[in-house]
Amino acid sequence: MLLFRRRRVRAHAAVREATKAGVTVLDRRLPLAESAKVLLRKAFPDHWSFLLGEIALYSFVVLVLTGTWLTLFFEPGTRETLYQGSYVPLDGLPVSAAYDSTLHISFEVRGGLLVRQMHHWGALVFLAAISVHLLRIFFTGAFRRPREFNWMIGVLLFLLALLEGFCGYSLPDDLLSGTGLRTANTIVMSIPVVGTYLAFFLWGGSFPGHLLNQRLYIMHVLFVPGALIALITLHLILVFYLKHTQWSGPGRTNSNAVGQPMFPHFIAKSTGLFFIVTALLAALGAVAQINPVWAYGPYRADQVSTGAQPDWYVGFLEGAMRLMPPWQTTVAGHTVMWNVLLPAVVLPGILFTLLFCYPVVERWITGDRGERHLCDRPRDAPVRTAFGVAAVVAYAVLLAAGGNDVTAFSFHVSVNALTWIFRVGVFLFPVLAFMVTKRLCLALQEHEQKLLTEGEETGEVTQKVYGALVAGRTAADAGRLYRFVVRDLPVPEPPPGPGAPRRVRLRAAVNRWYFRHRVSMPLTPEQSRHVEDVLAQPERKAP
Image 1: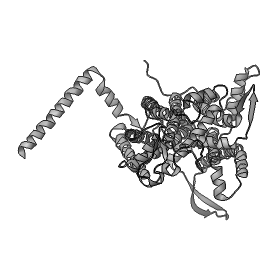
Image 2: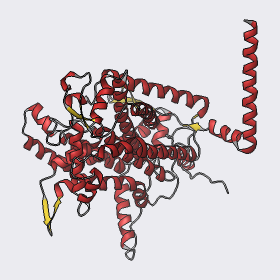
Image 3: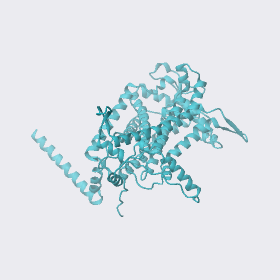
């Protein structure tokens, strides 16, 4: 035993010396030690909302691991074969190679169904985490300078994730995914002039064709994941370089970042979150059935799956097409299908263009060219918050409309009546949501103003000598008062002169509408100077 212990000690010493020598060699040629010191001591502000991006990242890691495993067994293609697997109800039926291999993974590969369902749940969590992460950035104003480019990268990541999800959803070649591909074919063909040519190229002929499944497989396992990995890497590099945003608080300014160092605190917590996300996806894959393709059956071009509903992230397109009236126009022998083109091509195009360009639009409205490293509370930007809530409500209405047939069947109501309710609601509900949200934000600001001037109620009631009953009040918590006071609330610009260009007058009018409703906090001169110091622009080191 003593001999083995000595050998083990010598082996460990040799490994340490070799590692030390290798690090020394690299450090002499590269700024290894200096970069590692800066990186490992980088401060990360701590707040639960900052975990949303990490959940998206770790869901993507699980997707890559499970997807790599699935590629070992999945065979793409529409080559027809007779099913002879272990699922008896389909025995002897003609199925495609993709559908056959999906059933093989689900019933005959050890752990195949668990990994496949983990992969599908991971895709849903990945897209959900990206969506909520983008909403967090939007509502807190974390997209402002110098992070406009990182916001655009995030929107591109969301678009690529949608494409990746659609490709993976369509690969099994079951009746449900085939119905979705039929819808996609109709959407592509609705594009004026080039639609029919583009559809012929993608499907390799008339629908259903024989090439799209293999092309979707290549997109799903190679091109889109490669683009996602590249953009995620660039996104993380920019997060490190630009430093993380933080909520206002004592000691936190627009020029610093207060938080825990990357090593060991952040790495330990982030590693724990990774295992929690993985365990959650494994639990969902084990107990929550998803996409049972054996129940849908193989795809047939002349059949449609009953109650066909897409995954939630593209459900709004389904709802938009169901709400659109059957409008068509024939021009020079060409039919323009407005009932498909507007809801499925124009609407998402406008939506994602506005989403992509919003940082530039808001910067034009506000005229702000400074850097912003402190997060806005949503109530302090009522118009922006109201726009975000209105967009979420519009999306929810379209998503609900995508299942109007299922809702009508379940609750025994008329599909036509439900469709008209959704048609009115898609225009009415977002407007109401905008008005209510803006009013709530201003009411919350007024409540904070009252707490700042009068204090917080203690629940005690005293009676004056002349008989009046007075509620007892005490000063609110210092941390809360700090958040009330330290906020970036621009002042509306004055109207330009009569000779100003139309573009300047338009921007000034939008600026006044954007910022005219505000609740000012009564600040002492000392508090005003402190707020100015906290929100002051960070000093840039000379090159």
